[in-house]
Image (cartoon, rainbow, N blue to C red):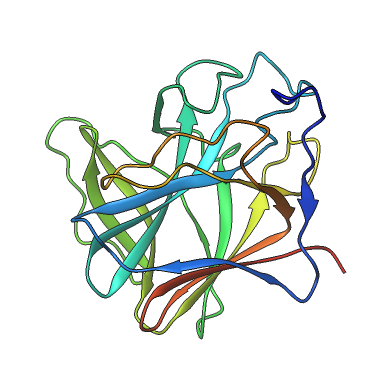
Length: 206
């Protein structure tokens, strides 16, 4: 229930698509984490399982990177603590087709043991240091697009969820808006790209 006593209304993105917005990189290593694997306001989730969200980082000008985070606690509030989804590739994986290539890439996180740092990632992947971890994700280059769909076998639906966050004040994601103020969308496909600015577009079922 929302703070005003009314249920939260989650809109379904149209098949033709809807622009979530475009932005420039105002801060070094700016990143966002407002795309969730489930509806964060729903009580109809497995409270024994962690939650997952898709993050978009901008390590430098000219490319972005996708990676997955999981909640530290099962079914925690959206403004709780998050960490790279280490070892959860089966449950927390995304199919990201980077145009014009046709290879399907899994977005996942990795923490090498000791000093066993892997060599340079293969084409289409990027590697960054984040919260003390080495994180591997899908690289989205200038003037390319990544088409991201959900691949989570244990999920109750095939949707991804966008929940609006408060205005940004730094490079890290801001807090999620209160239930009765922020917008929420569910969709089947996220299209991430960059031209003059970074942009995100979502598409719903036909």
